[in-house]
Image 1 (cartoon, rainbow, N blue to C red):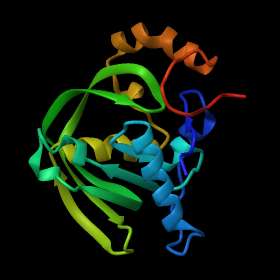
Image 2: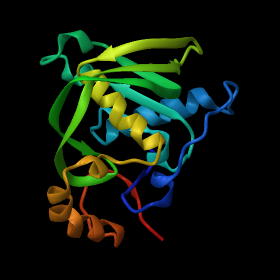
Image 3: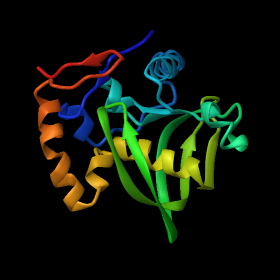
Length: 185
């Protein structure tokens, strides 16, 4: 089922998401719905707060990037209770990011290229690993959502000032996007 995406200004996007038990009701269906919602919105990642659930679940599908990143062919994974344990700040990269919850805004964000993460996958197998490259960036972006942080919080102060009015308009329901959203009430 395709779910509505919560847009910048929704309080759930600013909450600290909770770890869930591995017998969370209908977890497999939730993950399937999140993938379906993400694909319908042309995203590569989606965090549960973006669909109104303050729980630590993320889905990422990088297969669409396989032409530029062959290593991500067939990469489709769910992350349950993910946490970043450590950032390797020895190398950072600045790239433009966008977000399904912030339609129409793309800004440069600097992030470490390597992170140490722990999570449980869709088969309920535990992982504790170092991740690098573009996947590390996407994981940082999505895992930020679980901590109530959005990519616009990480842009340089001058750029943040320049997009301030667009963000304010979003909180008033003034935005355009081609996918289903949850309006502010």
